[in-house]
Image (cartoon, rainbow, N blue to C red; front, side, top):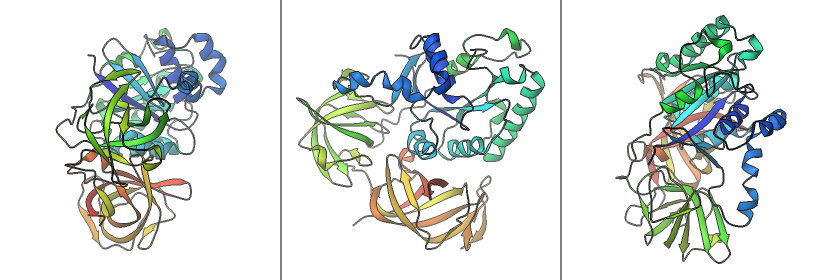
Length: 413
């Protein structure tokens, strides 16, 4: 089996994420050049995804929001993320699924607010493999000077966020629309001696699979399929799921038996971490479980929290984070309103050293330790136990204002 890599595309809106994804799919033979050119103006990820819709409606396919293609060395699944408003929230629920990220930066615009925002998130969420695609080189006449200057600026940005290996990441000049530098070296940029975009994808490493940890499958959707029954959809984050297993869904606490498991239209006997699956459960109705619930084994069930202590990085203020502030906390596919009951410390984001005990508030650029009381119970795990389910986003007023990881949990009674 080739290594499986889940890839998320990040970067400022209109910097060419969708066009680059489209170009990749042309190179992989999934769509034609003509389709890409015709759709490029309005080219949104959904357009490719919609091609699978008819199959979906017949109940054939279960992997809904993923597009898979192969390079000579790897199997790459693009996680359906690009979009405008909810992208950051999706990235936090989705990037916990990402093994690597492609940061797309347009050569003509350079670093924009979302460039930084998405990079901070990728770092906070533990995505440590990054490919930087400096796109739209056609708009700056394939100029090496523009590329070198922007590359340096992005390196400085990534280092300041905390990426220690920022110098080692590939910074690839491309034109996604014209296919320059994507699958083969660009004649227009013969000054560039590094890898093409596809070669950089080849170098991505599959992370070790946490098979020895307890089973955790955050549910993304639940279907009721005629003649089959209840089919939850989700990605196995940790542990192993086998046909015949009894699983428990938390917070509701309902149990069922796994009758079958499907991945990319194929029946399998066992699912491993990283697998995006649909699984048919006997003894559970569609009404009893929902997106945001987490499946596990009854002997080590998912942790249902009424509150937690989290280490956060503030991306935006106002509002500042202070005691009594009640934003929404998003973790994997779940979310719950929560009240900040205490700010324990302000921390230096890069060194981790404590700058201040019990500060009044945290504002943009600050990092700190906060205590949160959830207004409805939610599954969240300690980073030391199951890091995959410890990452969360803090949203308020339609935007993501902070991202963090859970360091301790108050179990719901």
